[in-house]
Length: 300
Image (cartoon, rainbow, N blue to C red):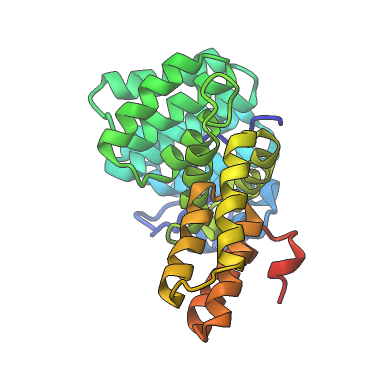
């Protein structure tokens, strides 16, 4: 599968107007119209309006970030790099990290992995060892085939924040590779990325890739693991004298052996429904729609 979207960062952010000034479009209007165009995917129009906006707000990191996103999506990577660099210059904290991610992504999309990695390395060596930057660097390394370096940086990212979206996404990728293949672990990380908070809505492109990778794990599932799952599911379907709670726990255990297995999740939902646990069954089917949108069993 083609490796894409190794960096997880928002498409745009809302900016407040920080200063007034001369502009071909009044500054307030340029900000509002530029952000609207960006949200609707009118990249070149957004870039033109946001250029007007930054003329009047030369130290607004969020406006520069949005301008960078407009240029990035329009395919003007040089202009995107310039805008992201300006954003990083004036930003702090999460805003600066987001600008660093954007700058690295602009180099990556231009086909320059070396400079993309250097952007991350410079920020990390400068003292920002946050999970999103370490995991972002790992993504560049994964794309370049540097599996061990990626593993090291993802381990460091986990120590900072094991719930960081970029960490979860790229960790799922790492454990999907032949060199580090661990189907259950890869599935758990990808599922965590998709189900945690609003990740699936905030990062739709990455969510689609995560679903593709999740589905692709089925072909990599070891035969011994599949046999183990099948054996547990068989006991769920023929419970004998087991209590309902024990059957439900067993079905959950079967799914947790490999969360990339939609049949195991379907069985768990069916067991919950058969026991009159309608809310649990509904929640499990909603998870199925999120993780496996192509599976008929989870369609409404």
